[in-house]
Length: 98
Image: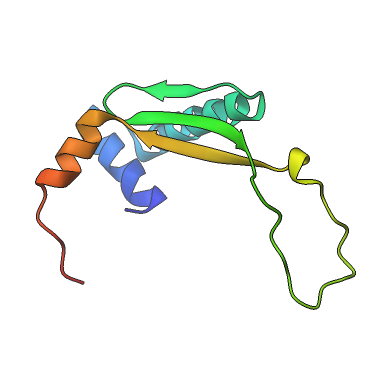
């Protein structure tokens, strides 16, 4: 699913314009991003939890000695832990052939 498809689904299901749906989705993502930047945990019932963690290792780029090293303690990553309901729903689905 793409961003535009999600906007269309929201607009159709809530009977609002696509512009209003895009503004709503943008506001949601903006707030989630801001809270994660502050180090907060975002818990969405029946979906999962987003949290910020420390990177465990530094990536290596071969032949790129010109890049400054960033200490691992300064690197952060976003983690996602799916809810039990989401895990169960995914287990019940049949595999998708590509």
